[in-house]
Image (cartoon, rainbow, N blue to C red):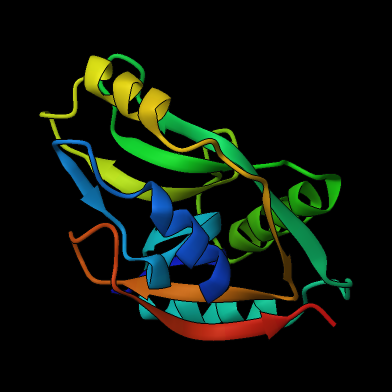
Length: 179
């Protein structure tokens, strides 16, 4: 069973700029810049037939033009039990529409509805227990000033991940251009 998700791949030059925020936090497992992406829909471990059905449905995506993705700050998920550091992505109407379409296609393929609210982001590090809330707050406050980063996305990529690794390396299984 492949573990799949759809995403917007982050171009190398934006990944290199984000890499400046790596380091300085005990308990952080840093994601390789080549694996940076904006997840649209996590599909999880799916049977091969479901994956094939989903890919067939992805071919029916609405025709759309390229969209601008803007990263506008740093943050952490998990509050009192931090689990990830991320670069926040501005939730533009075009991005939200694309994500909603991914959700509809996943449901048509027979997948359960996503229960988490969509919070667009690029995960920079996964955090272990040593990364206390205080340490995470200090790392965020000590990070260089975040300069807005933007890139143009013109395709959705279906990625697979190895079981139980979380954080890559990811393999592009299919790329579906917008137009």
